[in-house]
Amino acid sequence: MEIKKNHFGTTSKGEEVTLYTLKNSNGISLDIISYGGIITNINFPDKNGCFSNIVLGYENLQEYEDDQCFFGAIIGRYANRIKNGSFKIDNTKINIDKNIGDNHLHGGFSGFHKKVWNAKSIKRKDSLSLILNYLSKDLENGFPGNLEVTVHYTLNNDNEFKIKYFAKSDKKTVVNFTNHSYFNLGTSLDKDIFNHKLLIKANKYLEVTNDLIPTGKLLKVENTKYNFLNLKKLLGELDNCWALNKDINQKIELASILVNEETGRKIEVYTDEPGIQVYTGNNLGYKHKKNSGICLETQHFPNSPNEANFPSTELLPGEVFESNTTIKLINI
Image 1 (spheres, rainbow, N blue to C red):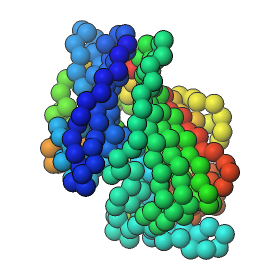
Image 2: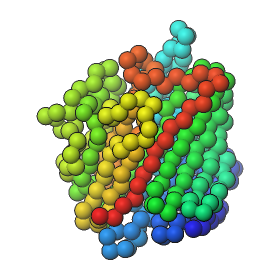
Image 3: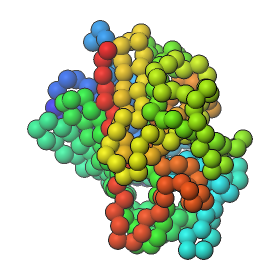
Image 4: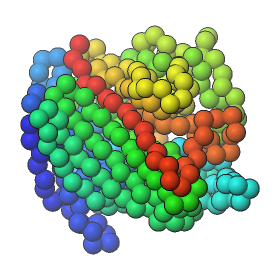
């Protein structure tokens, strides 16, 4: 097992960005940059033992700075959408960035995906970790509270990639974090993902409006195109959130499986989050072809601060937010 550290570039603001490579004893490796905590590569073998990258990304820092598709990044303070870019805390209206029409998306114009994180690496007997830290100051992009965020990326010799998020704030606020990697387990990142098979352990999905804001209703997947309770081929575009079959605050459980039978690659996604947003790269087009990657975003529900019946995303002063996701890399 080894960790390598290399200079990746300098941002337009003059900030130095570092590339970290975590490689386990089986040859599987992760490349992560301190800008946005972005996962730029996951090198994973096919059934014939040939290694190649399974996530979409760019070749240089300027492209990541210009990126509008959130490739591989840590998403926060709030992943997904918040209606009208506003919500209330203790009857006080909070206004945040409106960066997708009249609504808020993925932390705003300069969310976590556009920040340079402090980083340190740790090597253990059977695992490697990159620990990223960032202080999101009070009212950054409109969100209240000085929010201290820590993200642990860990790769072990069982070919598990674990993501742990921690946060604490000095004011009542809302948080919802995820990772926005676009996976393609096929023979080429230039091909679409419609030859993949998908499973989602969810009996219900969130009904949304035309601009993808939840109505507050959870609908049954039975007899709909959103039924992925059994592994089945992707037949069309998706950009939806599913309510996973689990209780809030339960242990980490299987949420989703993605398989490409041609290459023999499979990933299993485990989480303690209540939901998963699945997005098939419907708006890609620059550098990467439309639908050439699929995001499996473990998270709380979109627009939760405005929906009393959704699991709460509030974080109180003195509390520690924690969220866990594990991605198992498997050959079939």
